[in-house]
Image (cartoon, rainbow, N blue to C red; front, side, top):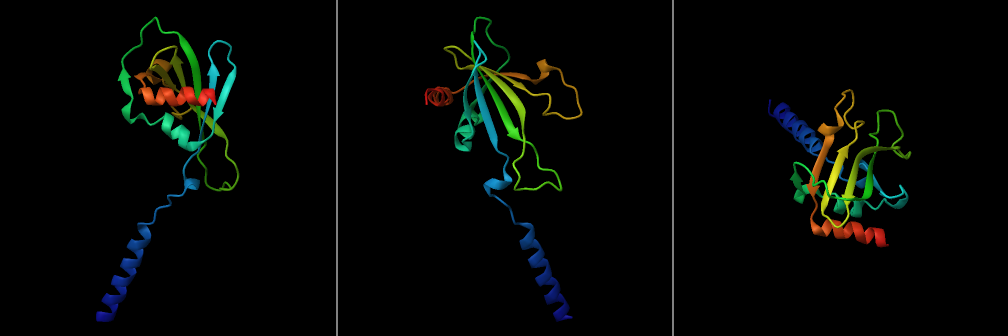
Length: 153
């Protein structure tokens, strides 16, 4: 009886240790890309692939949400935010995945205000009107500075 209990405890221990494994490698995280366009002429100004910069630009924990924007704001840049599509079962994990548009962000001249429109493709199998997927924020100065630094490089 003691042997059976000991074997049972060892098996449970090994099972529980295996359950706590987490894959924290960069390979398991979706990559993102930002394309920055001029609103004036729709010219692509820069593409940002560096995940550190992308994460820095979109650390949303200190964005201040607003209910609406002032009418006198002049659009300056449009940022198209893309994310790798989810890998489906049976797909080769080593093969490059396509990107899908997840959000369009508009910045405004001499302002920290932004408009974010979440892509309707993000919400699958449901039709949500654009006004329900549009949000307004005040960006922290540090994030706006990082964005302008990226454009100057």
